[in-house]
Image (cartoon, rainbow, N blue to C red):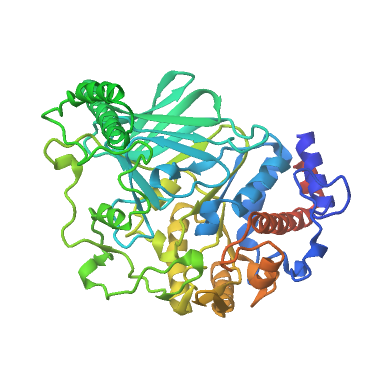
Length: 562
């Protein structure tokens, strides 16, 4: 307790960006004089109405800091900025290092590699086998999604995922003991099994939440999950056939390209004949063709036609319309290039006219498992910080009809503070409907409040950006300021705070200055590593400043008791 009290005193008394060679624990000394376009006077959490809604969050922080009891959970939701987890990773690192050994778990993680998309920069993910993917930004919704807005499915008997939480840390930061894997098997014929020290750890099934609870015999920072079929003989038989087919395919290609002498060709031919003896089990449905193991996916990620065929919708929901009823649209905007959508209409999701037949009712279908997320925890007092982000995500991509399992999964995390950073894709349009934007946020906030009515909220305004009008020509995008005003209106309505990133950056046109300072990318939408880290440092300083003010306003006797 004395150690945490000393840290709190240091936290209150030493500025984050001090030039002093002995900065506060966990802080990063940065010379902001190099960036005169950044308005540091605005780097605070503003409360347009009041900070009353933050008392519950601040009180939980008090209990943790002064008494070393309890856990504080923070949820940061956004788009590509958050999927990359650089700005959020920086904030998380500050919070964990500010309270050494006071981590309450890494929070939600996901095997993004199996979905053929970028894994957050703070950990590594690996996979084996063939997986397909569904996520909330696609036009056709193929699976019930949860908090993370993404799911992967597999019927491959070789399937396995590995998450290495400390892969990029210079020293170990994570030691998790409890894991809740959210996922399901259509027929209950596949179960996830955790591997720890070459031992099998079986989870306890919670049918109500479609999750499996695992307890590790020791703290671990590497999560390895295998997917076991109840019919183990069938699993082994099909796994052998797939491996033999891949070998046969590789030999055939080697034969086609080989310029070796006939003796070598005969040897390869014998190997080919041996591999060709593998027979397809009569009661098993297999992939149409043998896949090259170097891709490990249903489609090459560059094959867009194949990717589109994957997305046969298998779900209907109240407000999701049929694809044929949607108005024809042009090519999907390339948000990474700063291209525009026509509007931020809420009816961008649909289901196919004839939903795909689930694997569970197909003849000779293989057992299949769908995974929507993994929650990592510890029993120790501390802070847990989860980032949620999908490249290109808009506010309505987290609605109930798109992510029906959102609240069910969130209930196991129950955040004390929610930071909303969704909006850059909503505003990246020709006709920005700010009224609908606010209404969309009202719906999403209601989902959060259903889980925790006392959750504090901070809105993070959009960064300044440019829009691309020709191949190499960009112009300023005024929607950033319109979105900024919408965020402040939302803060008044919901008693929330606002971190005005747009104004802190320098307002309209400031992205060009960030790019010139080597902080932003040439697409004039995203930041470079240094830029994201700087934004993370700024946000952390603003958040801690608000907490400092809370502490300063506590009665002296109350502070002493704590």
